[in-house]
Amino acid sequence: MTLTPALRTSRFFKACRCEPVDTTPVWIMRQAGRYLPEYMAVRSKVKFIELCKTPELAAEVTLSAQRVLGVDAAILFADLLPILEPMGLDLEYAAGEGPVIHNPLQTPADVDRVRELLTVDSLSYVFDAVRLIRRDLPSDIPLIGFAGAPFTLASYVIEGSGSKNYAKTKMFMFRDPGAWRTLMERLSGSLVRYLLAQIEAGCQVVQLFDSWAGCLSPGDYQKYVQPYTRQVISAMPSEVPVINFLTGNPSLLPACRDAGGDVIGLDWRVDLRHGWAAVGHQRAVQGNLDPVTLYGDLPFIRQRASEVLAAAEGRPGHIFNLGHGVTPDVPHAHVKALVQMVHELGAR
Image 1 (cartoon, rainbow, N blue to C red):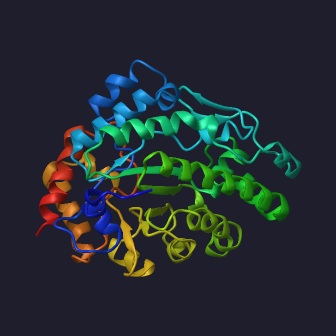
Image 2 (tube, rainbow, N blue to C red):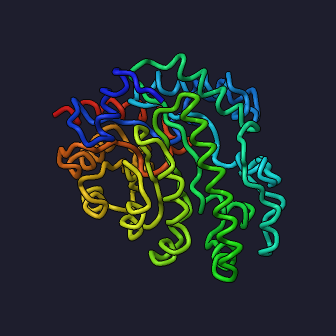
């Protein structure tokens, strides 16, 4: 991948490299979502998975979200789980229930059903969307690709859906380390190929979402998860910034940092000042406004955004974001206002 001068000198890329910027860059996780009228105009006509698998529509909602909000990066509209379908999992997006896997792994022997993707041709709709987005995205706006981290995908594969305690996943991990290793290696190998194909198609940045690893102790994360996250991140080209985002457990931040990533995502459960200290100030961080803040009035949102920026202490290397994805019923005007506030306050 060759970076254009406009992308290399964009405030987003500068922040990834911990270089000074004119103002704090900002983007919003799940920024193409149900809170946006422009998104709903498209989504109301098709099912969610159809939207994900139709490159022209995925490109449209990605581009409109970036344009309407005025954010400093676009993120590919896709989902974490469709990569599991060609690996042998029966995935359904059930109305009102979210994603469900109908043939989860119930015994260690079931790992034999999981196929590592030696080619990602079956996911070509993702890469077609990337090419369409990159063609029409402003020249100085990076496109973020993404994937679920190995542990989060493994949890879906074993639990079959969301979980409160991830007991099935943990017991699988504890009882048969060999089967766990095989599963994680197949997921990691597939993820490397998938992310590299996103980059080849036109993404300049990638983010790993480890949405469920917060259920683990630091020792278990280091033993059972960190090697595979590191394997994926270390396979990315050096010129492509990687954002490593793990939620739900601030005590895992040092281990998350050690797994790799140019930028470490912080959720809202940790003060940004303390989170950055745990990560180390030589590394960029992303975050970390509580998404629920956006239900408040504009003065309240401005105050809370100011507090996050103050915690960054003007240090180069801060990318403003929410501590998790924006929720569906937040007023879209509040999200637009937040972006403007960050650009205004971050320039001071």
